Amino acid sequence: MCNFSDIPSQFDDLVKDHPVVFISYSWDSEEHKLWVRKLSDDLRTKYAVNTLIDQYNRGGYDLIQFMTKGIEIADRVILIGTPTYKEKTEKYDSGAKYEDQLISTQLYHQIGSSKFIPVLRFGKFDTSFKSLIETRTGFDMREDTQYEANLHNLAAELWNSPLNAAPALGPRPEFITDSTVPSTPNRVKELSCTQFVEEVKRLLSTPYSEIAYTELIESETKRAYEAVQSKANYNFSITPELFSQYQEIHFKAVEKLMTASMVVVRYGNSKQQQLFVDAVVKLCMKPFINGETGVVGTNLLHLFAATFLFHTIGIACVKFGYFQLLNVIFKTKVLAGNALSPSYGYNLAFLAGMCHWNTDVLNIYMGSTWIYPYSELLWRKLYPLFKEFTMDEEDFNCVYCTWEHLFSLMYHHCQCGLMPHDNFPIGLFVFKRADLFRMQDNFYTLFYNAAKEQKEQWEPLKQGLFEGNYAVFEQTYNDGEKYYIRYGRWI
Image (cartoon, rainbow, N blue to C red; front, side, top):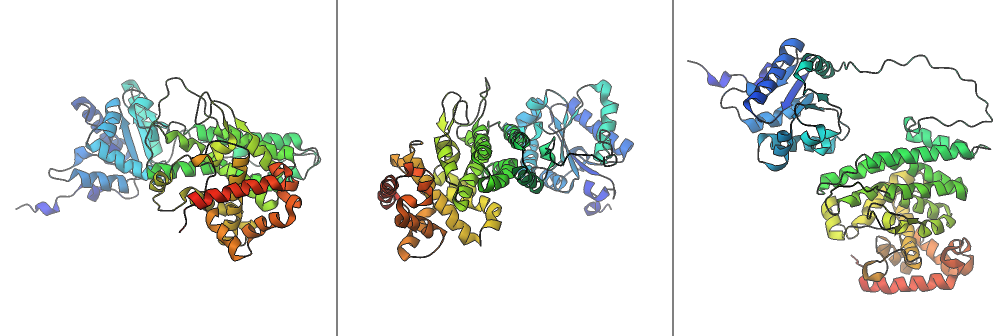
């Protein structure tokens, strides 16, 4: 009598030290199923690849368990793209949709992963795959006359021996340079963040380096802008996973500019600093594309990079006492088309400085219950950049709240845009104001107490904020006090 409990599954027959590949596809037709079966059979028999496919399952095997385990243990996952495959992953309850959910979850957590390989069978990449997959390098197997050649290339990739791999680097060349002429790397994206900042420092301290410095910052701005634009398809609804994913994409895009901006705010001149304001403006831009569609509110993700850089510059101005740049920031306008409108311009402080989601929605996206989630998001993202310039998290929190309060006052004074109740935004600095009454000494209290003591000699006023007039600052501050008493949320 046969012992049915001993019938092996596909997972029991995997050959060690050979690639394990899961094949995801939709049952478009019997012809299509046969083609996918042939692809799997050929990879096994001709190229010794462990393939996992539902057509090899013995009767009674649970398909959900097979898909879940198969995608988890596979070294690579091949997605056979057709218009029907894309439709089933988006609209129907099907095996393809379940596999897509598993794949999407891994992609959200491993955005840089090359585990998933699109193989186009019918249609085009943008009509046969979802947006997370269509931009990945894949294989076009629509032409059966090219089947064997494409199969060979695909197998080489699965064995981690791609035929299009770049050749090994040659020996390092020796260059003779004139030490009086600063040099700028041709491709700034090849510099690490630390190397980029060191290059910025070198150019700031080198005579006659204006051209090289300008080209360096503008090249990095262009690279960051292109990184943001490459993900500027907003035809989807925001989920907490996508919200977090876009934060990381945009943070990485502007990390070099953020880190360098602190150095330039501290040591550079106004012309050198202006390039970073120009960078924030550029990152707010989004060219209008005829026929483009998107989900309302999702386009706000486009402003993450500009927001991170904007607030980094603002915090640096406060921390290092260079306030003249803030006048520039609050008087700068972003023309159309920007992330919010293809035909209307906005103040830079409104686009990049403000939160455009309400508190409840933002807490859902962040999976939090904070009173001021936008403030929490920003200071937690930016603290690592300022860690070497502050004593600890509390010290940075005081600096951050100082900037946030000053932003609120300057925003109102410069009439940068309409606010809730036509007045001030509120944030974490509302809590820090209590320190003023308790006479605690920290960056926040010392900063604002200095205004009362020094009047027109207070450094922000000396550098031109609030028209350099203490009475104007005092009136703006008192207007804020009335607002906080009426609308501020306290624990």
